[in-house]
Length: 99
Image 1 (tube, rainbow, N blue to C red):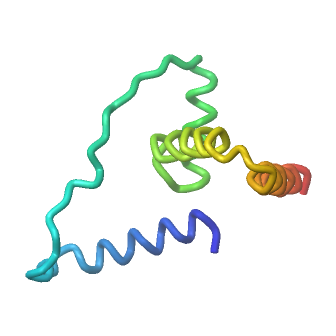
Image 2 (spheres, rainbow, N blue to C red):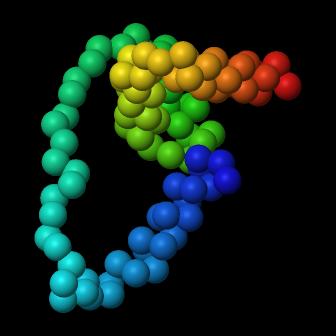
Image 3 (cartoon, rainbow, N blue to C red):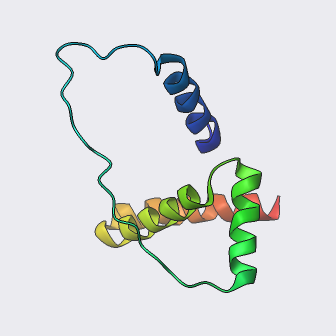
């Protein structure tokens, strides 16, 4: 399942159950405590990001967050296996670009 399909499936499930009450034993947590971050980008780059996000049918902020998470994850996993996994993912991306 593609990332886009997974996100759309999760969104449909959330929409379908948004008016249902939470179970009595459901813990109340705030997992999405986030801090807004501002970054300056060239207008052409912003336009390109927005165009790609629109093609993927996701918000530009979600696309950017995913890229940042991937970049951070690449620095956390410094094993040979992790490097090979990253290389395989990069190769798959290259294949998509030339297809």
